[in-house]
Image (cartoon, rainbow, N blue to C red; front, side, top):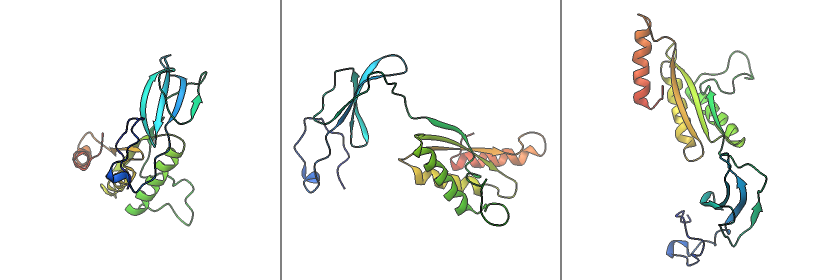
Length: 186
C-alpha cells in the first residue's frame, strides 16, 4: 500500500516504502478560484487531498493547472435532514412494506449516503426513530452504516424518540440516554 503521508512538491526521493510503487501523478492546481468571502485563491490537489491553498498566482505545480477565474469554489454540500432508518423505502418492490431488518436498514442507509456522496454531499445528518417495536435496532443499523462510510462521508445519526414528556415519555428518555451511549446525536 502506498504511503499516504503528505509530501512537499519538490520531494522526488522515494523512501523504502515507496520503492515498489509508481510515482504519484503530479499535483493539480486550481487557479484563481473565488471563495464565498470574495478572496481569489489557488488550490493544489495531490492524490485525493488538498495539499495547499494560497493567494491567486502563488502556488506552483509540475502538473496541470485549471483556470477557475470567474468561478466560485465552495465547500462540499451537506444533507441536514435524512432518515437513515427509512431511506430508499418509497419505491420498495414486492408485497407489503419495506423490510425493517437491521441488515436491510444498514444497506439502505449506506446506499442512500453513497447516493448523496455521488452528488457531492460529504456530511449527512440522519434522523432515526427509536422506541416503538424496534427499540434501538434501527439506530444500531445506521451506526453500522456510519462505520462502513468512515473516510468517505461523515454520517451523524440523530436519535428521535416518539415521546419525551409526561409519563409515556419516561421510556423515550431512557431510550434516548441509551442511544447517546451508543454514539447517537440528539
